[in-house]
Length: 67
Image (cartoon, rainbow, N blue to C red; front, side, top):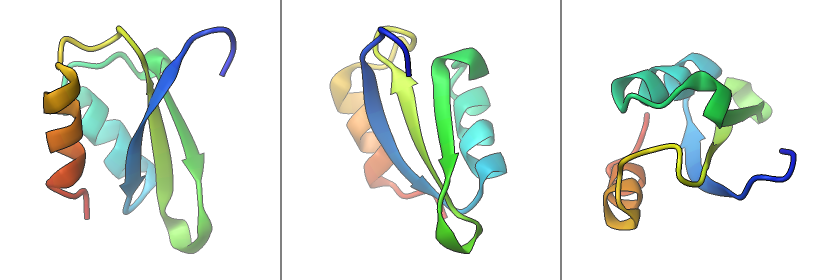
């Protein structure tokens, strides 16, 4: 994750679900770090400043769940 600060987005049901979330929120996939976890799920982080979402909007998108 290089020299940029990243904010954790949360856990998704799959890597594709994380990519879809990024696309739905107009976030360039180059600004998203997605790591597979057990059971086919994935955790995602987004580069700070790469989205127009406020901290509250980003937190709310996580709180709604991804599965």
